[in-house]
Length: 155
Image (tube, rainbow, N blue to C red; front, side, top):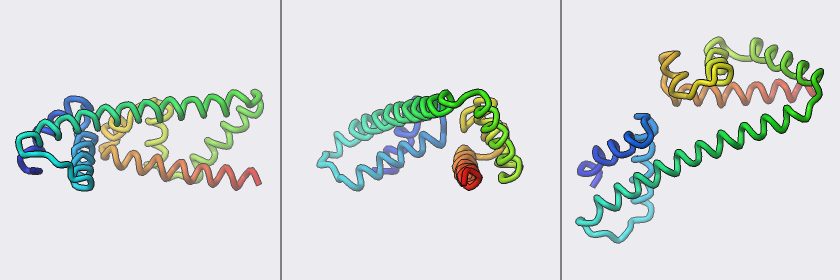
């Protein structure tokens, strides 16, 4: 089943997501779900089922990404808007101080390209010659370090 359908599923996922890594993830998730749920399908129906599941997984991935981005933007705006100008300036100084002292040069480049230049993970990855998953790892680790550093300074 995998060998017979993977390429077709991948092409469909890539045409929707326009990202090879995300397309591979989508197809892998479909196969994982099929393996877990073991739907009762005949061999004639499996190709249609897998393509429909792939399309649905891609649409869900796009919707989830949009929700996360909108949610993150809303949280940043609501937290930041509640501060007066002097607190905003203070917070920005502390943030940049923490970035320069706590993060590696590569982490700093990733943060700058993604947040300051508003590049996607894929665009950031291309600019730095790394994979989108490496960008995700840098951002996740960097944000964790920054949260901890800023939280420690509040005390």
